[in-house]
Amino acid sequence: MPNFSHRVRKQNDITTDCILPEKYKFNTWTEKELAQHVFENTEEAFHEKVKEGDFFVAGANFGCGPSREQAALALKATGLRAVIAKSYDRIFYRNAVNAGLCLLECETNYIDDMDELDLDAEKNILFNRSKGVNFEVKPMPVIMRKFMASGGVIEYLKQYGDFEDLV
Image (cartoon, rainbow, N blue to C red; front, side, top):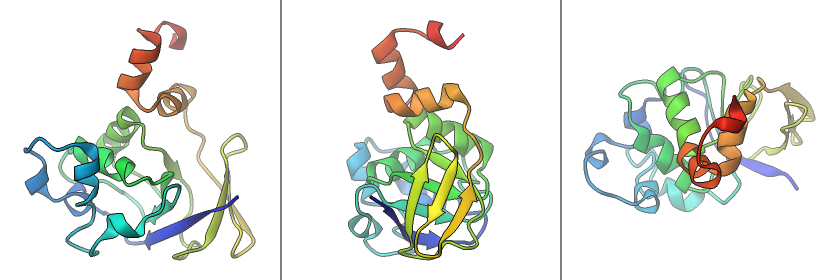
């Protein structure tokens, strides 16, 4: 069954401040509470529009700006299946992997809002069913796939107790 590219913002350099405004960084919030504020300065009630399993599509350098792990946690808590972008800021990328948020890197110019997408994670292929186009997804390192399958680094450690099987 396909998932939808529910929200498409093809612009480059979407910052962590845009994803989650700074005022939410220093308070104690649950991930679900943070999710209610994702993109609140650019799209009203984003969290209500996203359906479980949707994809968010962006341009290059997604997650740049201040190192804010809460941005990745909040995106994950919206129920997104993955963020698809041309590239990611390196610190945001690590924060997302640590949080268990799936990030896919591929061409995004030919994905529009509400296109139906299928992901074949084993073959690293994203199929845009609406347009009949395949996109090659940059393969994710095995260790990061294991972290994401567990729900993040902390969840991985809770399940396995250490990193012995990764060495």
